[in-house]
Length: 367
Length: 255
Image (cartoon, rainbow over all chains, first blue to last red):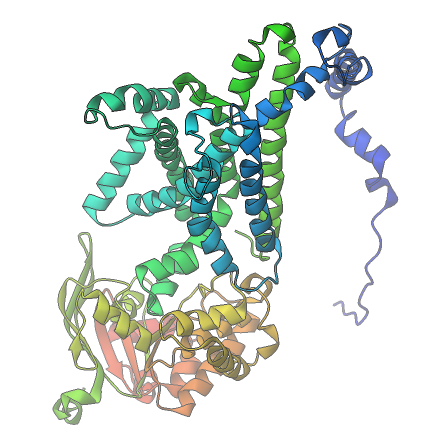
């Protein structure tokens, strides 16, 4: 027989289980193969990184009015600096660019309170941003009324176009995708088959085909003389295309929610829609944040494809407008590096934001 | 069922099941169930697993659909009519074996969700009611936590409080203590006993807690293979079981 009244106190962990040296030993030098790979990786870094830094920073030329100001040793960022405006606004008239700035600034300022937890009436602000703001932004950027000169969409370009397409694409593809996901899980045969058909159709065609169809084929079927904006057509194509992907991601989340959650919700008298929006979707969407952000990042990068229907997004401007400038020939590398960096910045931002969101929404339950 | 019960006015019964039949595919889960429940009656349903007892009470709020027979709740037959169903569900509370609290909401939000969105109760009033019931289940200090931070016993008590917040006329308990660690069973049972002894609440409880049945039940129903085998007062049921099947069942669970 054994009895004790003494409760053992907790003791600190042995010191040889943590610290940078232990970490190195465990992660980089744990086996002969690992040591070999670590050394190889270090060699690779040595081979690649110093020359890249040399080219991009140390030998680079930052200020020059013409190409002659750039020595050919390192990167010529003066080239980008000179044409910076065009990479942001495309062919948008310089005198009117304040309208674009105002619209984006408004959006940013309006969105800030959404990130402040204690801000009251967030629902109303969110509703305003989603329903009213798009009209304000359209009137500002497109103009044609209230004394603003019209700037037609074929003049829009650069990063501004990339952002417009992605923001509208994401905000509309998400709700449409959610509806489709719910539709696909519906018990109503018609709703279900329409959703399945829609999703499978749009997932089955390449985005390039969709854009091409929307710009070249669609006008053939439309009545003579009807002129439907090219950007709007491309946007609709992108939204429908991405909503199919969003739908499948969301469906994955819906399937992961135990049936008991839905039963508990309806057993209290909540309607189908209320139990979906109050109980099921908040949980399901939280589960699929990584998948959703994946889709959104893909959408953001896919906007570059609008080039094939003659719209010039950031990459399009860099490649076809800047690249065709005879005064600055020979700086394609700088252009592509710049475009890649801007795209990376936004995608990385989205990825970090999604991770922060996941942490914030974590409510201490494991599943 | 006694003659007196049979002759009582129909409105005395809050729930009536008449020749209820249900199939899962080809499997006949409920066979000709006839059960009348009076307002305020406390019924314990027991039986071996797979006997259809959970299915039976899940039919009452139509979480399971029956194929034959009738369920009449407060004089109105339960059909597929969604509006009627939502009304019935607001008056019938349910506690599940796995609690089914909403993990993304705080305890307070779990309790006020249905009052606010179904009954349109103002938020402050719903919160006051919620606090009252949290006090009754003895965990008012947990209101701001999330379900994942509570023990199983606490979660089940929250689930009971959540149902009570809708001020239901009937409470259904679907094996409320089966998923709990042994030391937490009594805290949940205590809450249920209190609720039963207060009176007024119609309770149907699927459980293996025979102590609970002896203490509070007006009637004990024993089910096996989709049928009601025996139905009696707890005294008679435990001391003088009639059917062989019941005797065997009791001998297996009471040591």
